Image (cartoon, rainbow, N blue to C red; front, side, top):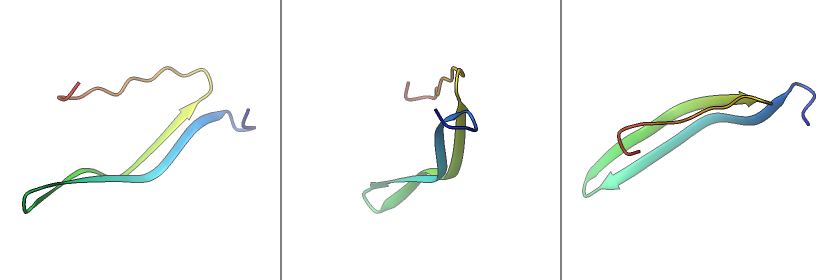
Amino acid sequence: MDKNGIAVLCSGVTKTYVTGSTRVFALRGVDLEVRMGELIMLVGPSG
């Protein structure tokens, strides 16, 4: 267990999709911190 209680730490996450000649920036520099014992859900249009 991390002494700060952090279970998951993501920093500066990016995701780009290329469709033909178009670039779609799905994520741009996303940060996420989940602490021990927290329950999270990520939801969106794609499910």
